[in-house]
Image 1: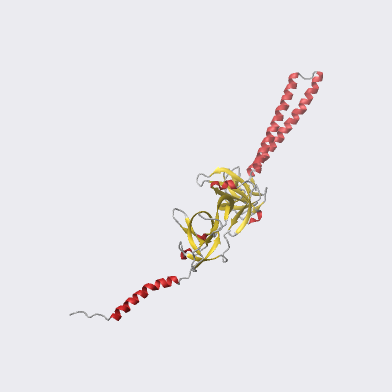
Image 2: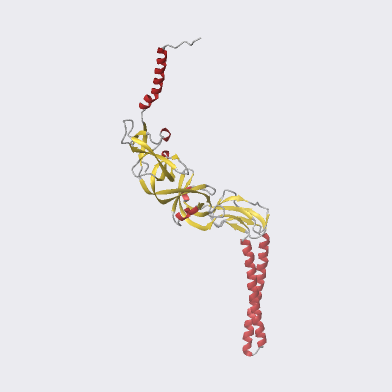
Length: 372
């Protein structure tokens, strides 16, 4: 059967509908409102401050495990963990009964020898007087003199032996070498100790120090006597560089910097601190907001510059151009960059996901300050 032709009016209606549909996007595009972007003006700089932090640990100026030079039985420990001691105070003693008996014995021997020396001296005097009237021979005089000399030497030897025992008695007491706090007790009364065995561990109570490992060439920015800032938690503490050790750690490749901390710092050994160092780095570039950067290729970054559009047709006053830059340094919410950027150009500060190169935009300069 032959096909029935559609009415001409239906065909023309379809044609008009297709034309209207094709024209709709052009009308919408023509009526699109340009994007408004916030910008900052690129202002050049010849340098930036390179801020770095290095972690260190607070240490006591002195920390000692103290014991006796002599072996013996521990008779008394006068302090316990947490106690404070002053320099020179006796904090532990050995049993010195045997040493006291030995000292008494040597003192008695010394007294006897001193008596023999007194007799020999009197004898020598009488012999020398008898020489004047030929009552004794010269041989007897010489013998008397040598007897006195020998006994004098014996007295000195006895005195030295007594002094040795008294030194041993003195060494049977431990005296605090400096003002300190007892952090560990390592032996108790009645224990027989070997020579050098530790009894107590002491921590000096004077102002602590800190040891910070500084990496790379940052150590060149530190000098002895320099004041630095250290941070513990949310606190800032003043410190001074006491010395820089002339040795680089083979594992970490750091140089140890020793800091004197303020007595009022409140820091205790074992606390971790961060030392902040600042160094001026000479370089020509621009400070811009971090939000103005978008990742580029080969390690570079891009940003958008709003250039005045002389051919603007009322939809926008500026047109966007992409510029390639290199980031040299970041500081919180801003970055120092160098590259294809000129002084005074308007840089789009944020909202880069809404724009593309060549897009016409209107700029808002009043809502953001420059990044300087």
